[in-house]
Length: 126
Image (cartoon, rainbow, N blue to C red):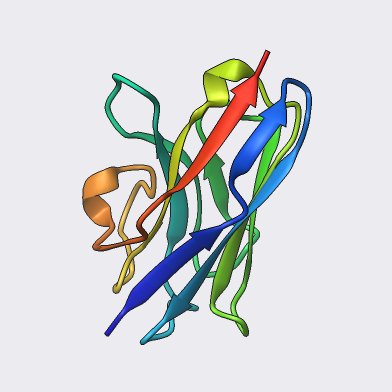
């Protein structure tokens, strides 16, 4: 059974940092894209960041560029999201996503991922 388990969420003050982790089990995703999405209260889930099979090929939502960094450890089958300079508008449930196959074209589209974690809450207080 394939599982993605997120951790690292919590409550932080504006300007603070958090590091999310997503550990995959049941299969390896080292050759395929993995990413992070989030759903803020009352809003639809949106793309945050993603990385292809090698950590050097990444994509970010404009709202997090320069503040968030996605990385992965293929040996550990884990993807991370380092979040700095957090703002109240970053408050959301953050979801890890992985694709069981290579993705052609954009890696920012939610529909291209077929494995999802249960989500971890990030709350940023002002």
